[in-house]
Structure formats: structure tokens, C-alpha cells
Length: 508
Image (cartoon, rainbow, N blue to C red; front, side):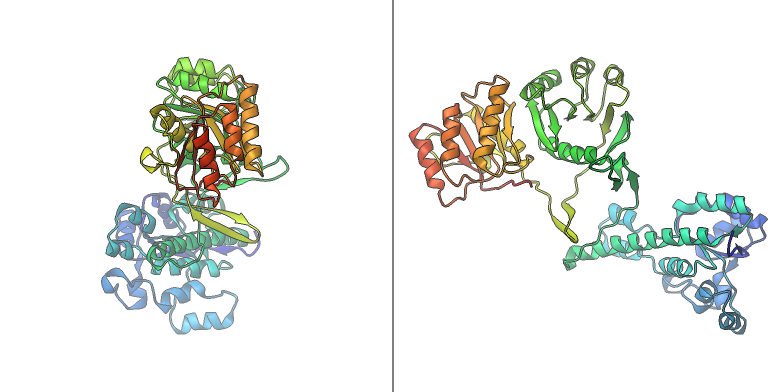
């Protein structure tokens, strides 16, 4: 190892003490001098160590109710001193500052406290000052000092001490310095976002402590990484590794299914629903979802909001698909679905979708509120002489949920709580409608009595006219065009009902 440093002294100041036992014993065996504070000092004594109190070094006690313990030149001088600088060494001797070779810190649990309480004083007291300063100082002086910035590195430290008998190389110290700044920057980000709830500064700060290397990116020649706690969203029960495109499809699937309370099955392809149905029985929901577009369903992503039973699994197993996600699976169902080696089977965990969304564009980031609006019958404004029937209202609301999650320009056709067809990602709303009508015809659906949902207003009456000639009897749209009257007039002349929601659901 180049630029080897032998650990002769260590400062330990941690919140989480569990996991230190082996480390402390190893430090004792290596005859390392240990400095410590407060509760950590007492804990180390209980493990058989003979630590030195930091206050005995600084000649200052812990003050301000524990807010100030390590913030002193005799502590930070020992950490920041450069071993190959004669002036630094002279200062250590002059001011009787002991050099420190290893710093072990675990910060106050700010995020955990924030999740557990809304009491401001309790939250503020969990903003670590001394600990974060120790981390930054030791990381800055990585050429001479090893920093362990959190409980997450306890095991790695023990392995390092075991492997090299208390010696460290420059590459190892620099590696832990990088981890240290990752810890400190994440901690500061969490604190900033807490204060920014009220300050509302237009500044973007996000930090994720976990990363999952994906099978590949959007294409096989691209690398993909997911940053975030993917394990809090689902448990993978079977199949190959997740890819970048899988993650995008799963995000679309989870967002879509969250808007449905009834027993529902959805099939997605390229972030859009190509099949979806709500039924009393899960097997029926599956069969009717598949009927919507059995061609596109091939190789798709499946999601449901109910536990999958054996009967439904037997039907699903007839189709080649890539992923299925559900809140659970009966044992028989799981065995059936596992018969394909690479098929990805996920168990969705209870979790809340974030209230904000962001993505990278150009040389920056755009952020917005998540579209959490789900229209109910109370939101519908009937604008035609003919009002929709009870069944049509049910279908209109059903279709509107789907079009909200469909790429714009989007049209959704539905009947009896079944997705009949959709037109997605078109540059013209008329083209989206024609695409949907053609697809419905391809799979033999009768559009007489079906309903139409549009993700934005109709600038002209042409879409309504095309829908009417195809058999559509009810329409749901946001409204808001200066030529809304033309569409309304056409509906009135042809006994079609139309409702406005006042809410646009563009999804680009």
C-alpha cells in the first residue's frame, strides 16, 4: 500500500452504537488510544475500553446541554494536522494537541426524527453540528486520517482493520472520504428541504443514499442506474434483473393502478395502458383487460390491485409477458407464474407516491407537482341538452382515469368499465381518435354505446363528429377551447351527452 498510515489513535462519537463491539475490541487489541464523548464514552467503557474523555483533552466540559462537545481546536487540530508539514507538527507540540488517525461518527437521526414527529424543537435538536464537522474535517485530511461517517460503514471498517492489522492506504482513505461527503451532503439536503417547506426557495436539492445498477439503460448499449430505495416499493420474488425501461413502465403502472379502488387489472406497454378492466372477479378483470389489445399485451407489464389467485394465474400464464406486479400471490399462483425462468414477479409494498416529480432536461432539471387529481361525478359539468346515463357516467370516469395516464395527445374509448382502445402520443387529437377507432375495430369491439375521454379540449367539432359516426354516445373532456360551442352544438344536434371536468391531464 502506498502512503500507509498506522492507526494509533481514534475519536469515536456516535449516535448508533450497535455494531461497534467488534471494532472496539480490535482497536483494544491494536493498542489504539481512543478518545470519546458523553454516552459513547460510557458505552466504550462497558466494552472494556479505557477511552480518554474529550473534555480532558480540551479542558472544557460538554456545554449548552450537549450542543457543544467536540468543537475545539484541540480536537480539530488533531484531525486536520498534516503529518508531512513541519509547521503543523510544531503546532501540535506547542499546543499539546494529540493527533487523531481514525474518526468514527454516526450522526443524530434527523430524517428518522422528521418522519416520527412534527414537533419543531425535537427536529431542530437532531441537527448534528459537531458530528458533521468531524466528518468534513477528517474527510478533508484523508491523506492522513481515516473517516467512518456512519453506521453503514462499521462492518467495512472492521474488515479493513482485520485485513491490514490497523494500517490503511491512501486509496482506502480517499474512498471513505468520498463516502463521508456523500453522508454529509445527504444530511444537509434533508435539513434544507425541511426548512424550505416554509421558505419556498426556488432551489433544487435531492439526494438518494441507495443505488441499484440496472440490467441496462433505455437500450442495451446504455448503462442504467436507479437512485432510490427500490426495496421500499416492491420485493422481487422471481426473474431476471430490472432494466431502465422496466422501471419507467413500473412507475407508469403503479401511478395508474393507484387511481382505481375496484378490482382492476391493467396491461401496459411503453408506459401506456393497452388493456384495462375493472370487474368483481380478478380473473374476469384479467380476461377483459387482455381482450382490449391481445397483440400489444405480448411482452407487456401487468399490474393489479388484488392478490393473484391460482385461477387467475393459470389464465395469465398463457401469455408471454415480462413483468407482473401485485400486492400478493397465493402459493398456487406463485408456483404457476414461476414456471418461466426470466419472468419478473414483483410483490408491491404499501407506499405513497412522492408529491413532486422531476426529470433531467437540457442542462438542468424540471420539477412539478404530481398529478394527483382524480375526478368524481361531482366534478362533472353537463354542458349538453342530453345528460349521460348512470352507466355512462361510470364509464366516463373510468375512461378519464386511463386518459390521465396516457401519453398525449390521447383519446381513450371505454365501455362497461373496459378499455376498448386508445390513441396515444399523436401530434393531432383527430389522429389519436382515428387510431383508437381503428384499433377497436381490429379486435372486434362494437363502439355503439361506448364513451370517449380526451386529455385536453377539442379545438374543433371534428373529433366529436368522428366519434359520433363510430357509435360513441358520451364524451368527457376538460373544456376550455374558445370554440367549445361548436362541439356542444354538434352533440345537441345528435343526441350525444358531453361533460366538462375543467381539468386537463396532459402527459408528455
